[in-house]
Amino acid sequence: MKFRSTRSQETVTPSYALLHGLARDGGLYVPEEFPEQVLSYTDLKEKSYQEIADAVLAYFFTNFTPKVRQKMIDAAYNDQTFRDDRIVPLHSIDTDLSVAELYHGRTLAFKDLALSLFPYLLTAAKIQEEEKRDILILTATSGDTGKAALEGFKDVNGTNIMVFYPSDGVSPMQKQQMQKQEGKNVRVSAIHGNFDDAQSFLKRVFTSEEVNTYAHDHGVLFSSANSINIGRLFPQIAYYVSTWVRLVDNCVIAPDESFDVVVPTGNFGNILAGWFAKKMGAHIGRLICASNRNKVLADFFETGVYDMNRDFYTTDSPSMDILLSSNFERFLFYVAKGDCQRVAQWEKDLQETGKMAVNADELAWLQEDFCGGWIDDDETEAVINHVYNDFGYLLDPHTAVAYGVYLNRHKQGMDQGRHTVIMSTAHPYKFPPVICKALALPSSDDPFAMLQSISSLTGIALPEPLAALQQKPVRFADSIEKEDMKQAVLSFIDDISKKQ
Image (cartoon, rainbow, N blue to C red; front, side, top):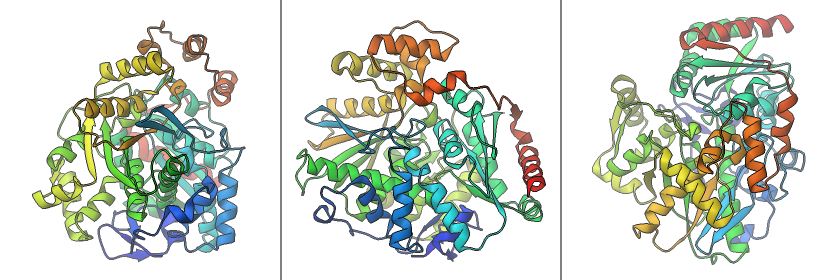
């Protein structure tokens, strides 16, 4: 398997793409030939999550032998990293609706499913490429990616990680997780700006000749843990395939039936992985893109116009507070039928005008698989309240957005009678202020006090990863201007160089 850029004919090996993250021309890596309709239920029935992950990843990471790949998968998905041996358990709400719980990893978010494996992939790729420099992983986060990446890469030899997050754009518990991160090779900084500011800066760093030369001269190579990296994106396909297999194994759907998925969407990596799973053979019907008030994606799937010229909102669902979805470029590559010049023009339009549009035929094509919807914060809180009081099941605000979009479609008769799975992206206890408000519990400046109130009401115990945070000291309390991010990166490079 070779990987190519979305913006040119450049092709590279999987190990090169894993190490470098972004293509030299600024594009994202996609498979040179995507493995379409290669998976079948007959081959996957009753297999474990680990076996399904191997079946999926064998098509993309052909640079690793089956033995090496299996060793990495077994190390990533075990009882040391996931609290449920099913890895992604399904919870049934009613006969027509299931919830895929993606948050049973070390940091209580779906990002763990890829970031538990990614460090092994990156370390092996570094060996294959005979890369002697230290790796510096630069990551922008709207909440969950940062902690999952920090936890995955802490104290990994030859690798360092630096995370930027918006100071007012994450939940108090997400902030605690990052500020108290352990590890000798980690650095965390809040910025006065939003997630798009952080992500745009990092993309400029990856393509900056000046900064890359400085890093090279100091024995450092940049890489990324965001889903622009194939090591983050392609492992996510596995949990969609696993969900499909489990639905059939459990007789929820027949082997020849399809199911819809609703995905709370921000940076477009999660829902794109679902679409890739469908292309590989999983019987997924419609992919429903659920947005909050920052509904640039929901609008696109309705109109074919991606328009960032709008207000940016800080919402109850912070991981979706994004206007520039970085993985969207990969989807556009397939919308353009692999026409990299058209993709490059679209990206230029976005950069220069904040707006791009597909034509009518392209819109009709993508609407065969995708649609969108959105709800606001009041609706999100009402959904959390409704689902808890009616079903005794507690949703985090992102999953509540997905559930709310599903309910609206169901009321309008738009669900086409298929079984639907909501992809639940985080543990509700990561968002205590929103949960307290939704359940009419008293608020507090202390997130742990709020969690105790929630636990007393619901009987849901405080997960150990969050309980342990309370006693840990704050290590990273810095908050910098977004214009100072470059200097922060250069300073970390200097520190890395001194330790070599």
